[in-house]
Length: 234
Image (cartoon, rainbow, N blue to C red; front, side, top):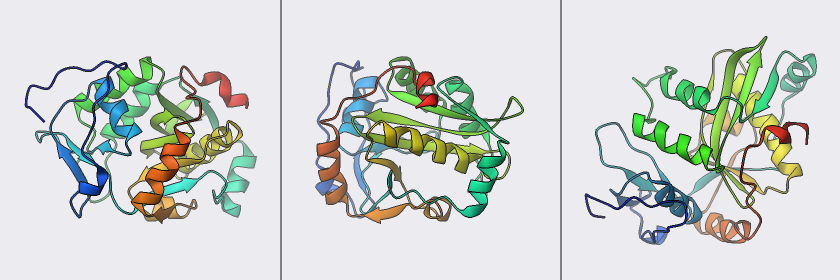
């Protein structure tokens, strides 16, 4: 990719190198920009950006891939009890910028910061305005206690990041999102990178070629573009 890469709007596409050409770590390409057309092209091809501030944009398609199939979500007895108590109220697409800002700023164990750069924050906020990026807000007595955001295309939700200021708030976000999008006909939440936290919710690793095959089929479904706040009652 050239250093001065053109800005692509949501109607423009870019053909990335094949994920089969990725490095062993999963790097497909380096460079470009975070314009809407680039980001949407990447997700359509099973690729996502992940890089540190000050570095060029790195585009990934890891093998294997961490996913949660919507019909395989695991909810522990303790989480079911917590959700029944009604401690949390959960909304969709009401505070997208607050959620991504919290994901950017909340300290993480063993890390000095997050990979969400200022450019990332602005790029995904534009995708939200275009109706492709969505947020889940977990409120505790009106206070934003946790949440997550990601991108929706076809029957796939590409989870990008989550945060939790009190125990189990991010789990509540994933559980509520999964229950909603399952009723909407979604196949999976793409978690990208494995973590023990996600495994407790039923996440598992699948080969990249299987992920790409499922993605090709999933993109044939309608994309539920726009504000999702009304889907909270689905």
